[in-house]
Length: 349
Image 1 (cartoon, one colour):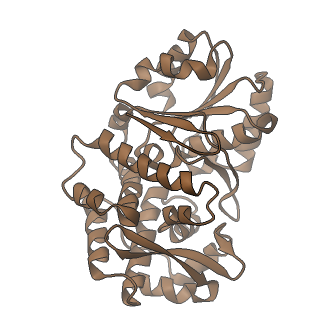
Image 2: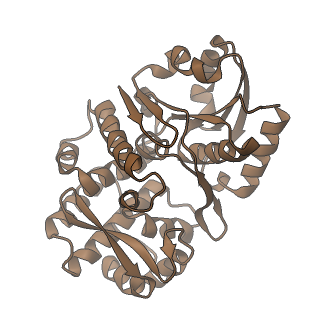
């Protein structure tokens, strides 16, 4: 399955089982005869690095590998700076390519490095987690975290190519797979009621199709609003609260789990305000439970709102929050920051 993304720099998302072991013909136009710098982490490297480097060498490519510790703690300015220096030490030129092999942290970090090294070189996303496959590898958002908040330093920079092999998901721990399911559920909530019904029946035998469906939804939204000035904000459903949960936990709560919590908190709150029908809340909470995700939060409204103060989606004294208005329907709600404590508290109760 190929999904073409018509961004400022168009690219393809190729989704196929077994792709990683036979990707040389697909990836060769982006790396042939040049250097490929593969960025990965210490969880993914033992599983897939040798396979990918073998395919790259089959293209006649010189390969250099950079491995980081897994987890959000690696998505920092310090790691980013070290990666840039390493790219320089490898002698990469503007004709070379960075390849992100891993989940969202690797993709965000490697993409931001590619966006800024030599003012921008090509990069390829090779997602190995469900969350990266359906969300973070597509759309061209790259970033690292600051001590004051998540993803506060970054760039909109589309990849040259995304290669997704659903067979890599077989090695995921259950909780990491669940992280990705939070984003899958998000797509259903924001604009695809039939996807919610499909998820109720389970993921068995449907992974490739569901990944393709989520990527197509994001493709359509990003093609219309690449720089997130309007419709693309819908993709942030639950994320304002989620990023606050991550920060309050010192990033011990994973992104996907936090997104599930964030969607639940806001949906409960909007229902109490009469803006969200009860069937939306019921469907969301049912699916979160079905896929092993939390719908409760151990942090209070004051702590969460303090963490939201540096959210990149804030605009002056307001912030855009996403409201489910029906199954598979959402709207953007410009919300005064002063109202956040009440909104969050209502969703926690």
